[in-house]
Image (tube, rainbow, N blue to C red; front, side):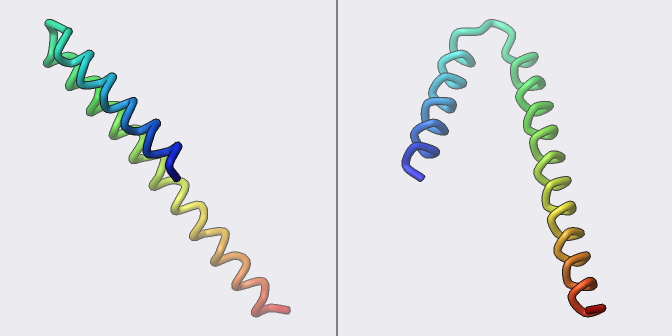
Amino acid sequence: MKSTALFFGIAVGIGIGYYLATDDKDELIANVKDSVNKAKDMVETGINKGRKLIDDVKSRAQEA
């Protein structure tokens, strides 16, 4: 867990540094928002697949 927090902190620090150093902040913000939306979609897809898998396992267990 500590390594994840460290990695997240480093990523945030790099992002803030890049944001402060870049001239085209609007484009950077748009790119970050796009990346966040893609990550959100991937997480939601994974959650839905997990729920479906659990439902399938439960239904097979009830059939047996």
